[in-house]
Length: 342
View: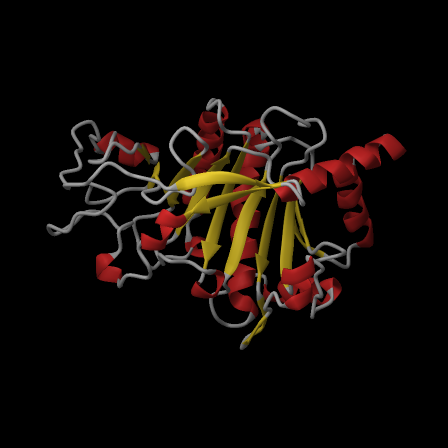
């Protein structure tokens, strides 16, 4: 459906919800002006990187109280971004997007209508639906000519910079290949030219052989703290068999994902005895270049280095991009293994 200002919204329902709910007559009765963005993409010729300037985002909603949350369902006469009294998962175009219309795309994903339920407490069935949503929207964005790469991610916690506390994530369709991906693909290309092998697959094999940084495993997935982790809490989740992106995952790997991911998030929340602020994001192949070099994987990391201590990106990290980690990866992996839900 379309919201009052013309933005698209998509409902994703479990079978039982879909059978009992008629979404065809849902309308957004708010009086909204058409969205207006002041976004532009500028090229840094020194670093050969693209930077987005989006000054209109200064006006976006910032930490409203729970009874004014724009991501909750519309109830009791209070109208929100979701014009129904309940939902399973919804996706809609961001009202304050980083990218201008037809130059990339920014979407919001609400994982549940419940305002105070963290992702770690979702049911496996719901987590599988969220995975299906990421796959569906990644495929849809891949059809947009302006989109070069799709990034599905969740920011959790005020320390990370979250402005809405409702459990949600975002999907960016970048109009360029991001600097982080460019660096990984450059390394993968050099490694393949030198060895004829896949750097990601070899990295996974080395972690499995060593074992000291493995956090959890399942039939189709492996979670580990990387040998050269930058963040005090950093876990990478790899499928055991290489695929370039989310739509390329087979059904067995899709079915297997919710269990290990929810287990991992549960460990993060148990680590310091309180919900951990984190960023969780999928590294997918660019849509039109170097797909043979990429290896789909999820990265979850946190700035918390202790219960009451935050890892600030200070002079070396912010100024030079050279990380200094306060916790050894082996120690971090052991802490996470101990925190795993039993």
